[in-house]
Length: 101
Image (tube, rainbow, N blue to C red; front, side, top):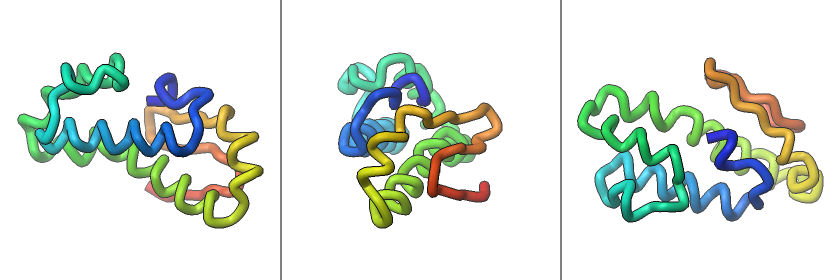
């Protein structure tokens, strides 16, 4: 996900998040969403309902950061978003954004 979001605008990241969610909910297949790249390999997770939430966790965190930061200071966000770092433990480092998962 972090590789997919690098150098993208907030609008592009929202589209990616929406596409990933559609894939997880079975609304679209990975083949129909080439913009997801390697993330489409997670399509099989939708067969295990208990794991869908795990697969969506990082995407939901980014969506909340977008909501939080764009509501406060979108100019700062656009300049600094390229330093977004998502760790395997789903901790997120982003200026002016704090989430606890």
